[in-house]
Length: 497
Image 1 (tube, rainbow, N blue to C red):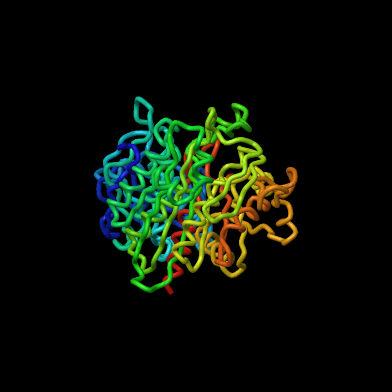
Image 2 (cartoon, rainbow, N blue to C red; image 1 turned 30 degrees about the vertical axis):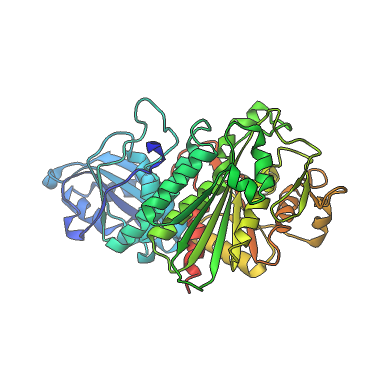
């Protein structure tokens, strides 16, 4: 269970006057026009001007994201940094929160290959003050990855990090956000023999206990008593029975409106009797990314002490094959009373969410946002890096889309025209769990979910593409990405006023 905890990075604020103190790595910036950051100019003056000469010669580049790490030249300041990292900043006026987050993560990923005692990051004068927390959050995220069970450490976070010119409050916020993203990533990156419904519920309970969230866990007996027959059906083929987790943050006071976030938590998806091929099954430990995102968001909401009321629902099941597995042709009565005819047992996430969304409704929320690795069709439509947004309320969807844009996370709204409703109607029940053929599959899945939210404003976020990456990038490892944690923190924070 210890591997569920995120890396804790020791970060302090440092005055500009201390920038040339001894450290393993000093990180400075180079903007367009070969403009040195204040720290870069200071260290350059103390080391004979080699940074300016290298920039003029083109061996160090100012293009955003270009990183050069070299030993310090010594000169008159031999007691200063042992190595200098020059980071290309591009045009600082064009930096947004997403760029800054990625820069912070890329910096750390470049230096975590070996153990280092102290790293000093001096980029604050080339990053807008309101984005300093994004730099910190990125640095924290850059210190975690998917190699949780390597016999030798693959990642060596520095013992201490100092942020020059970054206020302590920005460091605190950035740490909370970054660590919360890493909680989400670690839950997703855990193998399916470690994370299953009960152990996920235990991990969520630990997060709640550590942050002051209220928590309630429904086991299979409680699920049956509550009429959550859809969740029980999906999990019926597994030796690991389903769970439902309710997390609550009461920061807005009694009588204030409640916002709800709901996550799909299929801890492993074999496809059930509609079994996946091996290549399509291998990464299906990530099919609980929606629920893991919810846990990370709620951790941040609690630690940031947002003055709002938020309830989170995680529907947890393992979709396996046995004599107790649900079948094609089965009809399931959901918690809401609506009935579902099963046409494909690999379209299980929406079946789990049918009950989870109904549980959310009992809290009478002002709005609901759900997240799910729901459809390959969304990846076909938008690619691997973009989340799909589908909604019954354009204003709410615009809020979520704006939050994503602010945080530099890519999301795009797909249409929810009424004629799609006909494609999820069953001839023998209220609904069927797939649409008509392969066309518009992300939208018909959302239309299925829409039937379970009533008139409550609701946004569905399909994160099937961006939640889990097959290959690394300079700013992140392969595996879980933690996508949409920043977006939902931003959206919920905006709901405070």
